[in-house]
Image 1 (cartoon, rainbow, N blue to C red):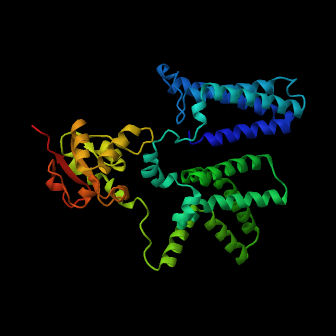
Image 2 (spheres, rainbow, N blue to C red; image 1 turned 120 degrees about the vertical axis):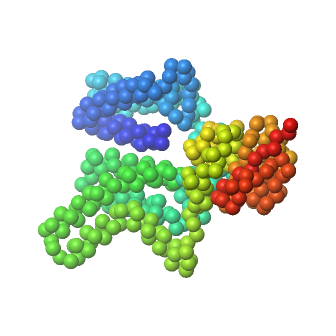
Image 3 (cartoon, rainbow, N blue to C red; image 1 turned 180 degrees about the vertical axis):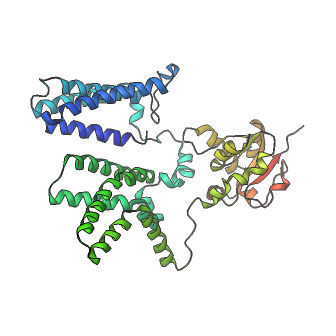
Length: 398
């Protein structure tokens, strides 16, 4: 689903090229539409069980995406196959506009929930205490405000590629393939502005114009052995490699701060998620563990235990249950623990998530554990004292 904006961008590009150049793009539009609808049908049949054909999931490929893809692809192919519809640019535009209206009507009638923001169903508490603190879910504006040193590392390469594409457009000689690459790069950059994780795609698309730029200077260097050309080629190579931007950002941070830059957000979490940190927990017979969301996945991966919370946006009930336990009083936590058969409580005191929750509720259960206030219904697991992950065994009545 993260590729959806780029799939849509390609579809729009093919359609607009067909409008502008009916004779040259007609076969491509027909075959693209047919292939898009056909592959979507194959993927739907191969990956979605018949029992789920009536379910529309907005965050995964399901009936909603399949229906839109099938109608869009088949509609584009049909329009491009009919001579009357392809006769002039105005007819092509009107036919594609009608197809867009049909698609909009289908979505509004059958899948209106998918028009909402991707995290619209997320509980406000989870947004405040979880989503807003996930590194890859932050926006460019948030990054500039709170962690500007990472902007170059995340956006430098794609911004350079956009600048190159803009210069090419200004100088003329713009080609069809430039339009496709440019559209994908702009779309991915805008997604990255909305959420940092989108830069994964913008950096990948940036490789295309940057590679062409390098090739251009290599060709010059092959015919001109001057030091100036060689230095420019080296500079072009360096600024086109994303780790260089990452290193420059780190170096700038060091220079400005005059000391070691603060550890990246999540460093303590990574230490807590190390497999070795779960050795003691893994030796304990399987039970239900109360832990923060970032500990949920490694507990499932490295042990035989069960958890409530995990870094999954669909796991609303389980994540809220863990929040209620950790943010509430020790008595609130005891009621939740006994009601749900919890056998162990796991805490990573130094993780950003634990620190955040302790600050949110300084008188809460988690804050008490971090500060050494252990309720009488818990007993520390001796071998985990002083380790990254501290374990507490629940004393069940009777």
